[in-house]
Each structure stands twice: as structure tokens, then as C-alpha cells.
Amino acid sequence: MTFTEVNLLGVYVAPISLLMVGAWIATVALRWAASRYGLLSYVWHPALFIFAIYLIVLSSIVFATAWLTLL
Image (cartoon, rainbow, N blue to C red):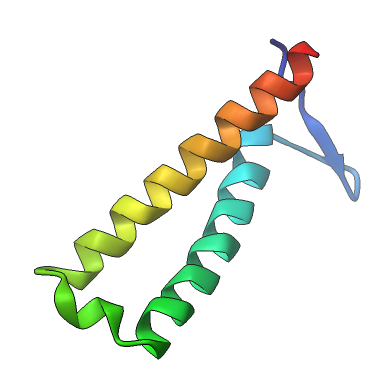
């Protein structure tokens, strides 16, 4: 498994930063859907819940990316 730097408009960035942005976008979409249907009112601490969802999404994206590079 090799994660190499990504050339983004002449600036080399770590691949985890791009994965974090992707996970943040996915989490924003999930948060919007959860608040739209009133699901956030059922959790004890909504901010902590959203943070946990972000970590789950980020780890899933990292795992999927690592698994796809092995193929």
C-alpha cells in the first residue's frame, strides 16, 4: 500500500488531506439528510454524533482506497 503525494496545482499535498475533504463532503450530505428528517433529535449529543459519523466515513474511505490500491 503506497499513498504518494498528489500534485494539486503545483502544490504537493498529502493524500489524507484529500480523503479528509471527501469525508467532510459526505458527512455534510449525511448531516443534511439527518436534520431534514429529524433524526438528530434522537441522539444525546448531536455534535459528538456527527463527529463519530465523520470518523466512520473517513476510515471507510481510507480502507476502501487502500483496498483498491492492492488490486
